[in-house]
Image (cartoon, rainbow, N blue to C red; front, side, top):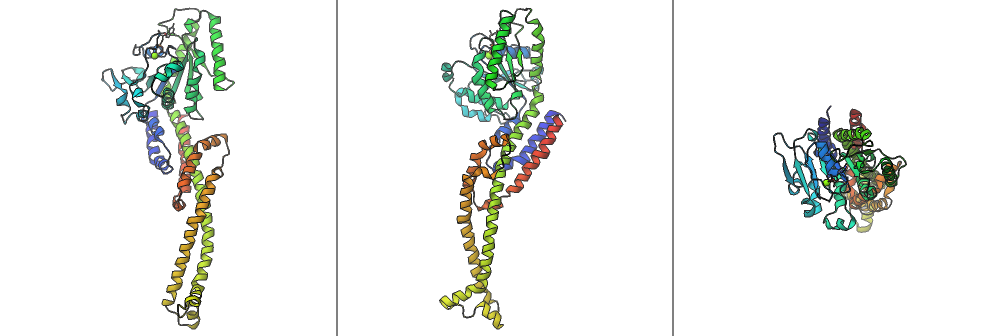
Length: 448
Ligand SMILES: Nc1nc2c(ncn2[C@@H]2O[C@H](COP(=O)(O)OP(=O)(O)O)[C@@H](O)[C@H]2O)c(=O)[nH]1
Ligand SMILES: [Mg+2]
């Protein structure tokens, strides 16, 4: 099955099976919908002047982006193919954030300043047929950062979340300043994936004077990187240079192959798309599952209490049915003949059952009142205080998810009424589990 068809099928499945459940548990799934909406995205980030725009121009074989030593371009620019026969043209940010077919609707919240620094350029290019590349303004020092007028890091995080491949560029001179970008990006990506969605590139290596200079820069970068990722193994760092800028040299010629690998990797981004989508769905559905699991457990406890209460109510009802009217007769001399004496005297008729029936109804009502007003409410409060007892946290992954979802569960418990008894939580839970174990698994198998 080809990837587009797979994506479309996933989209309709998510809509049909999952959307109602996300809504029911008041979870936001707009991010999931956004990702499913559009084409594969490559995001290029890094310091200013690290060669981002130059790399993009090279990849496309055209000078579409402005390049230069000074911070020349301070916009987030999406570059992608237009419709067939459409002229090259630019679409402003204000149109992009209002276009339902694009995944950028939520970016409106970053305000006018951001929107005016956001645009899409359409061009015909074979590389862009099934892919969009986003060029980003470089990271400047912290003083000018404030002058941007919008939350740059948050925007970066949101775009990174949509992206299937993130190219993080360093140049040998400024390798140290990249840490905050990396940290911001890392914290927004799904727990399980991430690492393989980011590729690290050291550019402008032709500016190293000689081999030992290059090795030194590379070593410094590796050290920085292990500090950043907190991992002992260092991810692959692609070394690259722009042939248009660099003088041919003995150092560079063996590295030409590495450049080709980088270009090939970027062009292959569409093939990570489905995997990316699956991982995102996986994580969000696991979050949903956890919330549903908690509510299922809660409603099960409520049912147990209701059963206990009902048993007592049943015994009381039987007593009230046969002896209630006797007590009434003793107290208020009504009725003249009780049900029991009518039964024994053989004079029983329908009218003897009216009062006992009413008394039973009253008893049941009182028990329901006690249950809903006191028993259920106290269970709700207890569960809210010890909400982690509602779920089994048998792995680190689940513990992490729980930290994120705990507030959601408490929120739901805070609003819970006796309707929860009939909300079908356990049925929902099995639906979710079936999706995770059967549907999602079969998609993973398909792309392997
Ligand atoms: N020597 C050399 N210069 C480069 C290389 N890549 C980019 N440049 C130059 O560095 C400057 C900044 O590049 P640009 O692509 O605009 O960086 P951006 O700010 O990250 O988009 C430009 O003047 C480029 O010509 C490279 O590999 N080698
Ligand atoms: Mg640029």
